[in-house]
Length: 64
Image 1 (cartoon, rainbow, N blue to C red):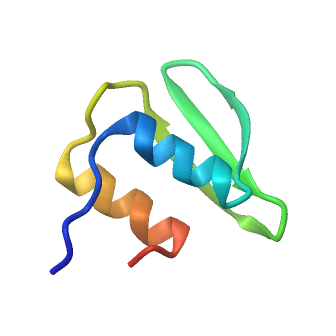
Image 2 (image 1 turned 60 degrees about the vertical axis):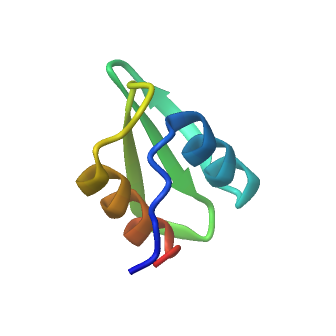
């Protein structure tokens, strides 16, 4: 199984690079993709994500 990035800054940088748009937030940032209106990725505001949350983000983004 490939290693999943857990650093929030790196996750967000990759999301933005791949065209995901930040559509708001509070305690969590929300990202939508213009070509995938059915998908929304929620990223908690922590320095590091737990492996389970990072894996979920990667699945929704199509990285794994």
